Image (tube, rainbow, N blue to C red; front, side, top):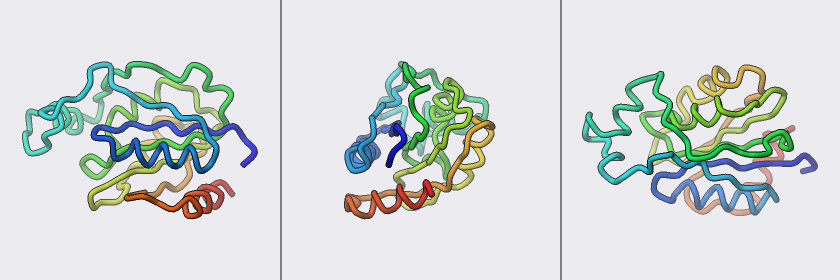
Length: 160
């Protein structure tokens, strides 16, 4: 792949981080971790509790959890893979925070997720709303330990 590529990811438990790191290594991309300004605790992530932080955020479409940092040199990237765990059948609201804090005009964004059983839901629509001047490609759920050849083939095909 000839364009400068970034793999940006949010990972609450480490699962998405493992996949993102493997993807970045396999496609020779830079890596950026999207971290909340206030880290999530186990109680914050308890989706059984309607009062937990993650439940409250996901039930409010306008929620934008603060992020600890932004990509300092985003202008150098033309392609950005954005990874996250699926929460409530879509991307966590912290992903919207990340997208809205960067200029993706003319850039290609490729969502990818890890999930215990659901697909991407309306994630691509959320990405298009947050980044109307970007090209949002069809995303994919990447679970387990994908083979290098499978990741490279997927990345190349999605960017055609």
